Length: 303
Ligand SMILES: [Fe+2]
Ligand SMILES: [Fe+2]
Image 1 (cartoon, protein in one colour):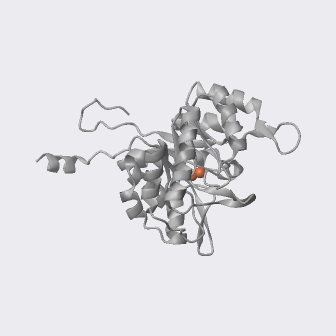
Image 2 (tube, protein in one colour):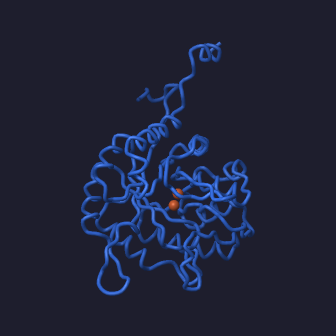
C-alpha cells in the first residue's frame, strides 16, 4: 500500500525481518514476499576447517546468501561473540564475520549485550554484565572496535535473564543507551526477552521502554517462549504470543525506522510449518501499520 507523500495517512512502510537458517531455499521462497530483511546467524553456517575445533563458513551457504543479498537486505545476528567476557571477546567469531563480510553484502549485524564464557568455561546461556562504569568502558570499547572493523551498523541486543539482576550504576535502558552513545553502535530491542525479564527478574517493561532512546533502536526481535515452572524461557520454537507482537508494535510506534524481525530456530520450522510462519509475518506487518480511522471517527476529528 502506498500513500501520497505528505498526506495525513503517509507513513513509512514497516520493515519486516525473518531469521533464516541459510540452508532452506524452499522456505525462503515462501517468506520472501512477506519480508524486507533476511537475518542469518553466522554461527549456524560453519563447517570444519582443518584439525581441532577450527571452523569456517560453509562456501555453499555463502554463495547462496550472496545471491539472496542481490534481491533482499541481508543482516547477521551471531551468538558466540561474548562481548562481555573479561578475558576478551571471541576472535573465532570475528573471523567468521570477516569471511561473511568478504562474501556477502551484509547491511548491518548484531550480537548480544552479555557474555557466554567466563574463566574459560562455556556457560550455555547468555548472562548480562553488571551495569557498572567498568563494564560500560569494556563493552563500549569493543563495540567501537567492531563498528570500525566492518564499517556497517552494529547493534547490541538485550538478553533474556534467568539470574537475579546484577545491578550497577545505570538503569536497564540507561546502560543500553550509554553503550550506544560511547561506541557508535545501536540497540536491538528483543521484546520477548523483556517479557522474560519481567517474569524472571521483575523488569518494569513499560518503564524500560519509556526510558530507552528510540533513536538508538535499529531492530526489534519478536519470538516465542515457553514456561518452565516460574521461569519464562526464550526458546524461539514457535509462533510469537499476541502480547509479544503488541509490545513490538508499541516500541515500533516510537522507533518506526526499526526493522521488526520474527525469530524461529531452524529445528522448529518443520513442526510450525511454512504456512503458519507466513501468517505470523503477515500478522506482524498488520500490527505495525497504523489502521485507518473509521469514517465516523474521522468525521468527528474533522469536525
Ligand atoms: Fe539474539
Ligand atoms: Fe532476539
